[in-house]
Image 1 (cartoon, rainbow, N blue to C red):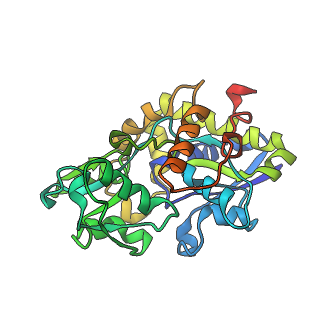
Image 2 (tube, rainbow, N blue to C red; image 1 turned 90 degrees about the vertical axis):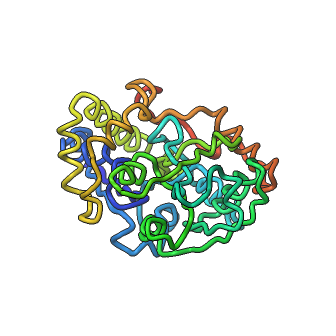
Length: 305
């Protein structure tokens, strides 16, 4: 029995449903894997999931494409690489309150943005504002990560970055109405968040373990399509009490089209990654020229074996 420790990017939510289904239904065990799933709430998000991989505290983590780029370009580069994507298209957006007079991103000048303090995040948001005719002049704050959504709801901030299939679903049950701005609608070629990432050296040293992990996870994705009610029931036992009000059936219904098909789940388009890398360089947000092969690979996915 081989062991895999996956560190998710947040407390259990709809993005993580394949992992909990695969573990609960025994799909990992059938592949000879003992899988541990942990999330940042267990350590107060004092260290990012990707950093846990770098420090050898986890085998795999969930993070966006730009985190992989960040690790590859820091002063002491680390060979983080994406081996699968959860979604085929971006499911995130910038959320603002409808009564805030922010009709489009260009109106965010002078407003308060709640940031997760990711390396490129603030500049990406500023660039979105500029692409909509604004100056990119926003006030950026860094509240506690787990309290960012509540800070937006409570009016402490005017905008933040959310997942439409989680906070967006939660917003449907609030009396407050929101607007959502997708980055791709404002000329930012943003894709693949979250990705399943790991240390490329460890993955290539023991490729069959990671292939089996992705095979079992892909099987769980298929289970979500065929047995959505049961999949939601499984996830509900892991969701924290603070999120129990979120309609999990609605969240899964929203998410399923983004997972892709049996053949496409997990696959990343190298062209899309190349376009994002080029955009970072053209805008001056990144100065290192990376190869797509340093960022992602599809070779460990079951559909490419």
